[in-house]
Image 1 (tube, rainbow, N blue to C red):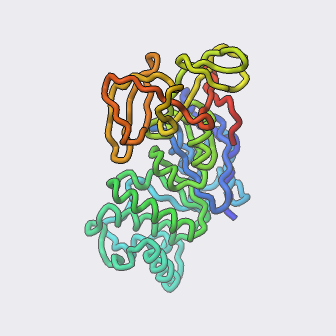
Image 2 (cartoon, one colour):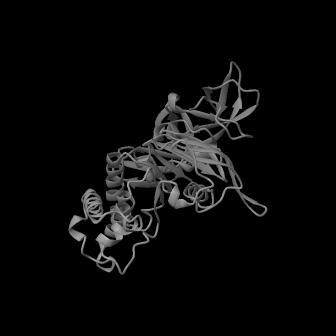
Image 3 (tube, one colour):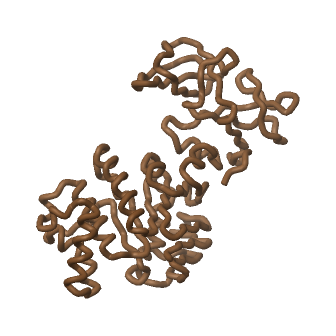
Length: 350
């Protein structure tokens, strides 16, 4: 069992607090992604789990054992870095075998593990090559194979695909998910790329300013953001937000259109809808078209609603031009509401 438990972990650098009382549990064999913008604290948290940073407070448990006082080599982990950290003077075989030789394993066991993980990562034919003879994607496969060969309880990955081009990232995402599921390894993966997070994760922990804002399954994070930040960070284009003013009979008025909404003491809350959850309709929100971008089967219309930026992803058969006014109706079940002060969701979320 390799459950990871982060308990009340904080990290301070002088007067700056990088992490604020983080609590997070990663289940055995779960693929957890830490997602957030640069500087949000996700890499600091990963380094604390790895033992490369010491927490200012709190505890780290792996497999039911407290490890925050232990050096990295005693934590049962392996790491894959953004820059691969492949040794140029060693062959692919020796790169994968490096950690195994440090453990003084028998040669037969080293051969077995290297061969197995190289085949898993589709680099079995490259074992005699040096890193200078490899492409970026091949070097990344070597780095993952080296981590898997250690048969660790936990693999920690820090933006491992960020140096690859878009096509290679797509290929490696699919490969990583399959290989790590097969290896039954608990994984924590750090990225700022929401597409990577959505496609790889069993659960996503969205981080902002040193805090975990929401930790849930990808579709839950996307459909039911716990805070306005999550809705605006996840999604391309991101969620639309408009002010909603209290009307009678428990309804809310948004740009002159009434919607049923949550019970709230405030006179104004925030209405939110994703751009793909809109369609033209006579009872919709009046939107003035500013830019129309063809996207193959869809068009992205950037509009203005009462002075607020408002985007809609519409069928390409809908003809729009700059300066047009179009009425856009949201799918009622996809509307979300947020408190304007705390910016937290006014609807239940997991």
